[in-house]
Length: 109
Image (cartoon, rainbow, N blue to C red; front, side):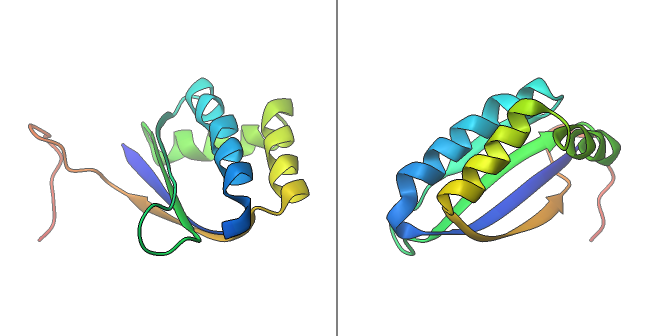
């Protein structure tokens, strides 16, 4: 399993627009083979940082989702919404391997 961590720098005056953007993507990721763990909006501290976490069974499954999202009409509409509202200033993407209780995955020190 691979979990994707997205850290967004968002426009703090467009929180409602970014939250709507997140609500667009949750069902899309789930429909396209992933499991979305949610978007996390600013609460205390920085007012312009938001996070998203979602997982795919494999990195290859994630890459397939990324490719399919480029031609999926609903995904394209979500991308356009972010562009039109300019609620996202920038983002960074990182990949993690979860360590779960009872997991048989090997780990490195």
